Image: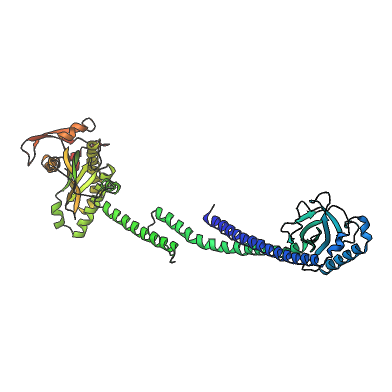
Length: 488
């Protein structure tokens, strides 16, 4: 279920519940006040009738025979006049009669004088008065709080003793219909108010939920776009509420992510993707640190390039050099190599760092072969410009120190040690031996049998007192042409 639907249902439910509770409380209080007013009137009428009756006349009435007596007829007419006078819209008095205690049981009440004319509803002298289950305290003037129910309906009853305390009680019964009739329009008004609240709440909350959910939808869409890498996404929510604050934070985050992506792209041009991924994946700050590990180092240098800039325009030299490096770096990355640095027209490449690589020697030699192959393709392309570029590649494997070297303001990931120096010397020796790729015996021992090699004998490398056994690749992978043809 969408947030807007949940919000709509919640707001409508709260509005209706609040209005419903308020209307119910008001209805209950109003009904209570109406009944209290009604009971007060009933109590006043009952007390007034009790003061009007002749207690001595009531004492003379005991049975059916007394109904023809002048005292009975006088009392009956007196009660009827009072009843008729109080059958108004504001009182709705229905019955007025008197009762007395039964001689056999004081808890039983007997009717003495009844003002009712209808034979069906009137009670004769001596008949038991059914109190509806509620006991009557004939010594108190009371308008009862609870209703009395019988076959004739619901009644609100009041009673009061006569002044001579003869035991006779005046009972006045008023129908609750009057109060209920007053409450009916109030109940209908309350129901109408609730329906009106619903009619107002539903469209109102719909518009409110739509207005609230619109910024959420925009935020959701913007977050998805940012998650897809579209860091130029910006939100135009300018409100000063929480949505505006979230929108501004999201815009700032997208801007910073865009800057980070641009820095990452720029960073990738200076280091290999392995180094970059290692730095980004680390939860520690970069520091000037290193470790010793076995690596394979490849040096590649263009033969005779130093004299080329004197014969060509500078822009052309940069163009050709960039095209050459573009292809060489692509080969290096394809074989999991890490370009350490560009030294003029030369390249230093590391295999086995920053991530360990058990196949570093094979990948280094494969890189060298593919670099020579790419060079042959470039030579064919540049034949029309009179260029004949040759390269020499030296490869050596062994222990070295690798890590971030430099200062706290400028550092680079590189390798140092005798392994690096020997690889550089082997690259220089390719010119003297007339070979394109020259590897040390340390690299050869790891890859022999995987490539066709030719033993180039012991070579004295400048900077080292002892000689070292070296090998060159006999022919390129996938072709019978010897590597030496590429540099001849």
